[in-house]
Length: 88
Image: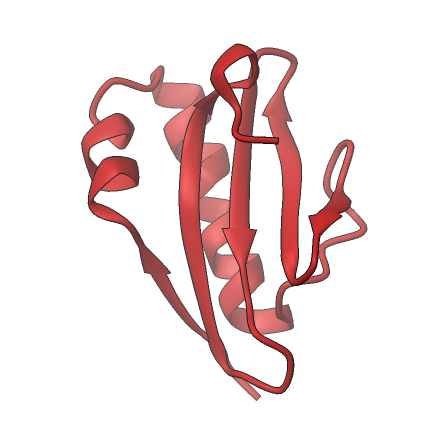
C-alpha cells in the first residue's frame, strides 16, 4: 500500500533554503514515507514524538517531522529545517 505524502507550505518554503545534500535526503525520506509509511526505523534518530507524530535526523543539524493519523494513508510533513528550531 502506498501512502499519500503531503508537505505544508512552510516546509515547501524551507526546502528552497536547505543545502543540496539535505534536499536530496529529504526527497529520499519522502519516498520512504510514501512507500513504507510513517514508521521509519532505518532513519537516524527516528522516534515517535507524540501521538501519531514522528521525527528523524536528515543530518546532524537537520530534522524532519511528520504526522499520520492511525489507519490513515495520508502523511503530512510539517517541519524540515534545523534541529535547533524543531517543534518537539
